[in-house]
Image (cartoon, rainbow, N blue to C red; front, side):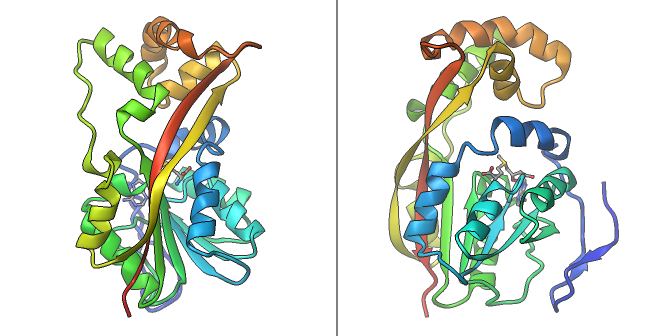
Length: 266
Ligand SMILES: C[S@@+](CC[C@H](N)C(=O)[O-])C[C@H]1O[C@@H](n2cnc3c(N)ncnc32)[C@H](O)[C@@H]1O
């Protein structure tokens, strides 16, 4: 999937490649409905810890369906976003019309050096081709004194959804994948130090995810799975999620993200 249009207009404008290798375009609307607001508590922490306020120039990489861009604009920031999935870019432009949203990946950001005060990535950096190089791009467009703020899923023990996903994997005869470095305590800080950033703050934020009914639970857990796979795995999902049934109906799964905020040295 590619096209040769140019988006941008600064000295870093280049051929834009619709490089949605993870298939996010196809699930963009469903993602927005089921998961778009999920990370809001950690986004609020990033705003406070990175000292984002009126007039701050902020780039959100892997902006998805644009909820953070809307929150940033609501906080008075001058928000920009980028995402390689065309469907996500469309959602983000609708949801945050004040923000400039470009098509592309964190690996090659189409902005000049020192364009932003803060660059953020929420639940997105793990999709970069090379995490350290991607962080280098975020640092380049922030420049000396700029802040970089990243948040990602915490390790499995903190996430009710992992209980459900492990049950689905086991039913398919699969072993769960080990936790990646970015999920582990201290992993994000180590990455930041490797990239030459000064770590300003880090922590863990609990994020509840709620599903109104069985259908929303199954669609949320098996996002993007073909219909026949959803039908086959639905009973496993429902059985594994029984501990998370809300008293009034539906489900509440408690999960957590780790975050780190750093500063680019002068
Ligand atoms: C799990 S979603 C998170 C979206 C949003 N940040 C949020 O917190 O709701 C991951 C997003 O990362 C995007 N993505 C995938 N590969 C990427 C890359 N190389 N650079 C930047 N974003 C990427 C996907 O298209 C998707 O929109």
